[in-house]
Image (cartoon, rainbow, N blue to C red; front, side, top):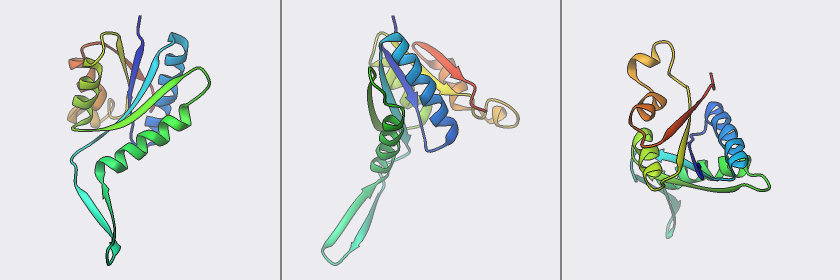
Length: 140
């Protein structure tokens, strides 16, 4: 039985919808929801005046996005964690799924239709390479 539901998110409405569906699946299966945001590198931006400097990395921004979505979908009876991973979204989701023997990856169908499908999509890449079942949510 699936116990680890993995959903990839960004700050879009379609990703939020996929996360809601993933949360419902996790509750119904009694599983843990892993909300993951991929980021392309660990670039750091420094903001500050004089000796007061704040360093913000892209991974910090990605982790904040994942945490925001995780907080939004959280509900009683659901265990949710969140985080950011360095890499392209399909590879990040697949690597996360490989950590568990009982994973299910949830992705939205964004860019699986029209001209975007010619260039590929996260859902298309994940469904072809995932080590587990993949649930594609109709988000468009």
